[in-house]
Image 1 (cartoon, helix red, strand yellow):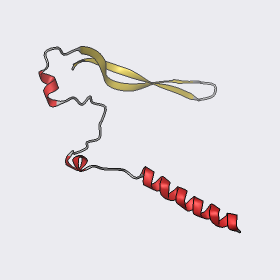
Image 2 (tube, rainbow, N blue to C red; image 1 turned 120 degrees about the vertical axis):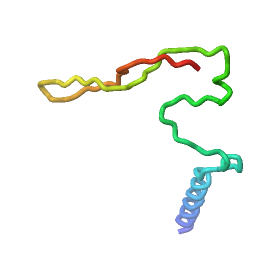
Image 3 (cartoon, rainbow, N blue to C red; image 1 turned 90 degrees about the horizontal axis):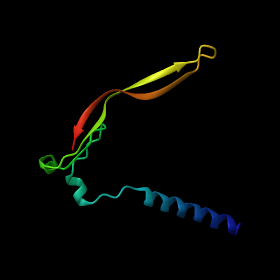
Image 4 (cartoon, rainbow, N blue to C red; image 1 turned 135 degrees about the vertical axis):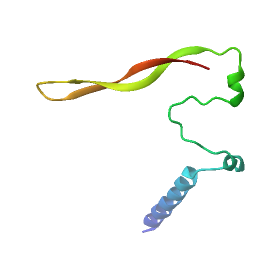
Amino acid sequence: MKHHSYIKSLQAMLITMALLVSAPVFSKESEDISVKPLDGELVLPDDYNKAEDKKCMTVCDQWGEDCIINPRTGSRKCRRVCKSFTEECF
């Protein structure tokens, strides 16, 4: 019976530690910053757009899906593909 009480107290301590470790930690600075969810756009500092040495690259402008359907089994194999491209400079 001694071991049973030790195991229960060990379980309670481990659960408490897990909750404390997994709890989010916020500083006072993070309260002032408004967090916006990203939708896939590149977020750069405000003064970055004034830089003279911007580099340009081709990126996907619109994503789509191409699927191949097996006529015998009816199974679909789809893959994500870029439908149109655009040039972005940053």
